[in-house]
Amino acid sequence: MTAPQRIVSLLPSATDLLFDLLGDAGPGGRLVGVSHSCDHPRSRGLPVLTRSIVDSAAPQAEIDRAVSDAVRAGRALYQVDGPLLDALNPDLVVTQGVCEVCAVTPGTIEAATRYLPGCLPAGNVLSLEGRHLSGILDDLRALGAAAGLPERAAQLAAQAQARWDAVQPAQGAPRVLTLEWTDPPFYGGHWVPEQVERAGGVNVLGAAGTDSGRAGWAQIEALRPDVTVVMCCGYGLPDNAAFARALDPQRPLGQVWAVDANALFSRPALGVVRGAEVLVALLRGEATPGQSERIRG
Image (cartoon, rainbow, N blue to C red; front, side, top):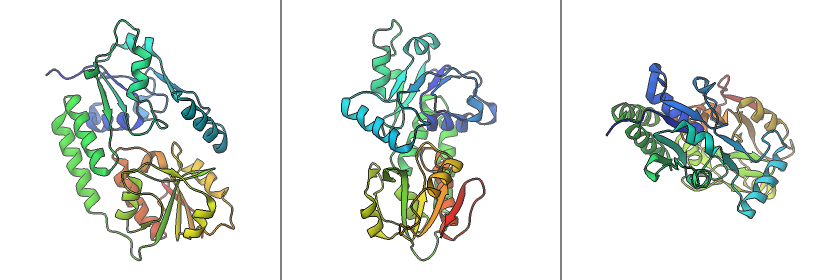
C-alpha cells in the first residue's frame, strides 16, 4: 500500500502526533492543511480548513451558553472549508470521534464535502478515538500505519508506555479535583483521572474513559479536595493561572494549581505522559516552570 503523500489534520493532537512520527525530517510537504486549533510551531503557515462558531475569546460562561445552545439545536460547533479541502486533494484526513465540543468530527467533514466533485471516500478519513492512555497509543499506531510509518509509531508507543510505567507516584494519596472548566465547573474525564491515579492522587470526580462532566459548586465543596488543578480545555498555563486566581478564595479547594492544559492534559497525544509527571511534582508541592504554577494553599 502506498503511503499517503498529502495529509490534512483537523485535530491538534493528531498534528502533534504526526510531527512526533515525522521527527526531525519535518513534514516533507506531506502535511498540507490543519485546523484553526493546531498550534504546533512547525504547522505555522499551512492552510487552515476549520473555524469555530463560538468566540474563544469570550468569557467562559458565555462560551458555555453558546456551546450548550448549539448542542441542543443539533448544530455543529465547527465548520470545515469544503472547497479548500477539495482543492488540497489530500490522500488522508485525520479527525476524531471522542468529543464533538473539542474538534471536528467525521460527520462535519461529510457534511462539508457531500456535494463536492472530489468528495473523500470513507477510507481516506481516519478518526482517532482514544479515551485512555492505551487508546491514545493505539491511535498513534493507527496513525503511523495510515501514514506509512508503522515502525516509528511502534517505537514511540513503546517509549511512551515505558515512561508512563516509570512514573513514581507521590505519597499520601491526596484527594485531587481536576477542573476542565471553571464557569460553570466541569471535572476532567477520559484519560485525566488515569493521569491523577498514576501520579498517586485519588480522583474525586470523574472516571477514566468517561466523558468530563458538569458539577455544582456545592457538590465540589462537599468533596473538600486536598488539591485542585485548573486545566481548562483549550488553554495554556497563563490563561489557566488567571482562571485559577478568579476562583472564590473562600471555597474549600485545598491547594490550587494551574497547568498548561493544551500541552499536558487536554489533548490525546504523547504529552499526557508528561502530564502525569507534572502531577507528581505538584502533588509534592513542586512547580514545573512553564507547565504548572501554584496559585494558593
